[in-house]
Image 1 (cartoon, rainbow, N blue to C red):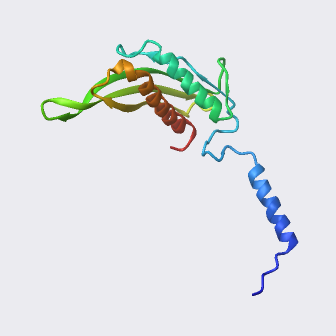
Image 2 (image 1 turned 120 degrees about the vertical axis):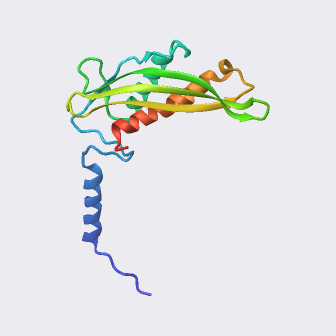
Image 3 (image 1 turned 90 degrees about the horizontal axis):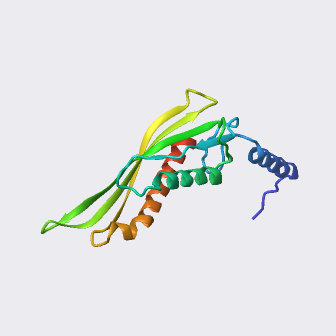
Length: 173
């Protein structure tokens, strides 16, 4: 069986073409993030906590999670004066509901749902702005006290909402 000969020039050409494509600066990355190259800074204002039943620090804690996500997974730098992109918002709902009723009017689990309203403004392109609510939930056993599992549930829910906000803002989601 004959092995085809590959020309040395073809290998070198292919290598440089690959290097050129990978090294080419653009607004895309391998994570699917799509940020205009002219955008370099962002700011996330502290989210107001409009829900009466939530922990008092939920807005501030959520703000930090969103800031960390953008700082760690994009090339943007946090800047509190004249940022290119600005996020503002509020925790609009923190609700516990009984789910999956069982015979005898008991429930098998409860659900914590958090809703966050977000305003996004691209200060470099005034047409690129949006206002949207993001919501997510986590279930916990009906026999558990919310206070015992609240921190873990909030972390799970906040992480997912932040992921959704990040994807909506920086990918073509």
